[in-house]
Length: 309
Image (tube, rainbow, N blue to C red; front, side):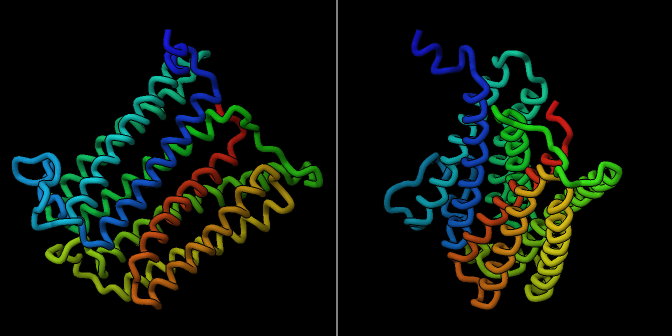
């Protein structure tokens, strides 16, 4: 049989992990290409959905939208790549032995989330890039990235159980652990708040995706300040966790340091794009940073768990 079904016949932990990582990477790539669609004004390059133009599934050479049609259509094609990866991950999780019910449930969630995300993407086109629908479209992508990250961490071949640092007072250990867990979850929640407010800022500012697309009617400067407030809260919480994990939960130390660095870098990019009047390149970079931030926040929460069962 062809290479034992290319590994799907008896998938190993490493094989399933590879597909889980592919899910994360592909969805992050979708965030980047979606940003490209937005900043190039190609959101309505294919003005209808599921077809590109009336009667044509793909762009017609010489049509009025030109390069914008190709950019938007390319982004749509990426959805099918995501579907293929999600299905492959699901098959690998279902055939993995011993049975891992959590891995199966997570792979199902991703496999269902990707086509749902595609449908909402279609609705954004049919509503002429309504900023609130666009916001939902982006948030759902973040949900998929978070779930896919959970799956990747869960099936990691060398996953470990969090431990307390050797120099931690045993009597203080339970308290320190509870505080660490609470902080990690609070950071996760605030990350979601910051990301959602980021979509509101986008909906009130430039780069609507097309000249005819409406804005949400909110003041860009006020929404940017509100978004920045959430990010500063995230910085403070991250700093607190870094200090705590320096003397407490050793498994969290690396994750908290990395996350803290990502938060600072993402905040710097956000301020820079505001000062420079939101250049397209920085917008894409900031969107990529949001995806990495969500991965980091998810890993932070998972690092507090006593087991991966």
